[in-house]
Image (cartoon, rainbow, N blue to C red; front, top):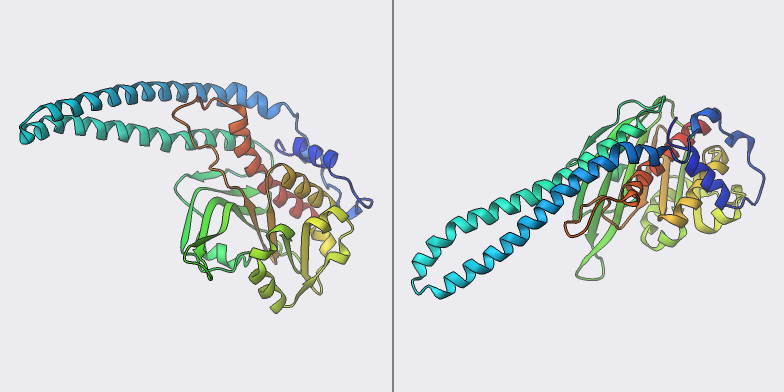
Length: 340
């Protein structure tokens, strides 16, 4: 497969283990994780960079159009001010208003088209892997709210539930869907909206149900996820930290599971190393496994791959950031499938 080795090696290099790896967590097929660290860079140089250059030429034309429009607006403003007849001035400005509407429409089309064109190229790179089915992308679609709530990672009644960049596909026998989400609820103590979640949310469905249920939450987010823990405990969940031998992971995450769940078969050393490494560089992650379903929330406060009109968007780092977020979610699905 084309998308795993460089991040996996990075994770192993940057995380110290407090115990020897569990043999059950070893990779079943090492060849599925082989990737030249320069492979994505090469793909970027050959395929994505030329597209970004074409888009940047559009951006420069747009910027010149905006500059011309601003100058024209100033001139029309002076003309309207100078004319004593208001009706005549208003009629004279109508064509200009139509022109401004056209400029705004072109800017909106550019911003709406930029991300889908780049994302589809990134997905073309990913789904060339032998285990991947076709990855489908819809810029305007989002994860259905019913599935978000069914995860029980976030016990909330959203006042705002917005999302975009829906991706669905298959890795081997695992079906998955993911999207960016922004979820807010009314504060219980103040007259304002509180953030519940903002980032990438994923749901994976395994062909064969995993045994038991597991909940992994970042300790830094526990004050905001107290209801999540209460509901899980109410349904028979209990603390499983004693079964986690990785000290750094225990310090960073709290792990709950049901009595008959063998947590170490699901939360493997490979997965713990990757989550710790990702968290250090990117952000917090929460995870819920229940039977055939796995849910994951990846916090990210930035709008990824949103174009900038005032500066160049030709940037490998800009594209890699989006790739990393997709990769993070898919890697966890792979790791769980291998452990299963």
